[in-house]
Image (cartoon, rainbow, N blue to C red; front, side):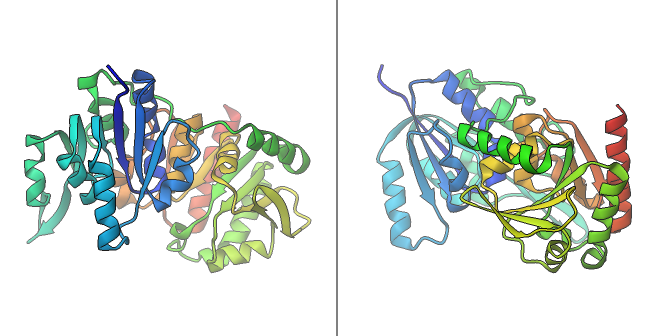
Length: 358
């Protein structure tokens, strides 16, 4: 019968790729001898390359010039595929999926919602209405009232039933094991932490919290004192004022090529700032935390889906419907509303104490 060729389009960001790894792993399990190509983005290539599932990786960047895009189209369309899976809903991916020669085609196509004269309308570009004529297509809108339809992992778990690839939406996400990173983490943990800890990921989404530049340092100190557990503060290439203020007060460790570099060392031995870790090392720190907390970092929440970590999501109340689309079904999930900083940290403290008591 020969080797089956399978192509997967995932040209968006890291968190979206991790969210689809349960589907990808089940495809590999169903077709263990298949030749699998993934079309990814520059953004998620740094994690895609860690997986040994793929026989070929093609990178697409919407900034490519016209001639480079034509070469990419030619490279993709010159082959025949047994299965085409388009998960990102991008025009480049959809166009290739429609044009290519493939026995089975499975697409997710996103609809958007806009308000016109005070009324909400869900719509998509006209050509996307004709996609079901050529493929097995599921439309998606973040504002559909049916929560079971609005959930990406649930859509993934049902998308490929025609080729007998189906699985629970509670299926564990897949993150590759790296023995060298595991050993490095163990050595670091024994030397510097050796304690239960909460992990708080800090990024640009913290900036709209009132008085974050002024009060974040004191709130973190108070949280650690009240809980008497270590706090791990993580970030990647964070240049914001609130983060620079934290670095003046707490021990900061910069990981370059997974090596430890102390930028500054403070006497406080219960709070550590860890910067610029590799994705594999970051996953290890998440997996060992009591809680992992962030202002809905897509990569962070989906990494929790690969190791069943309890995730605490800090979101605006009007974002709930949209954020629910990404939450893994296989983790413990708690939500804190993004209000004022003291209220946020009081909620974190109460959640933590409740979990510790249990």
